[in-house]
Length: 59
Image (cartoon, rainbow, N blue to C red; front, side):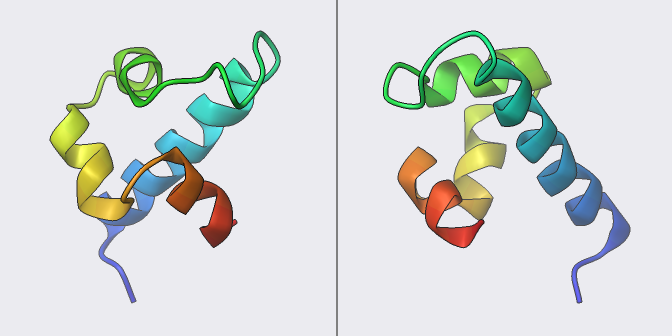
């Protein structure tokens, strides 16, 4: 089981991606946009996912 901080980060990433998908397609979405909107570092995103497609596969 992930710790609370990790769970919060993963939830933040999920919510950010879902919000951004209201504005643009998944193909146009970038990791940089996700991280900027979520106010997390790219390294934080990459600690959990290889790329946006890895995120999608895990959902």
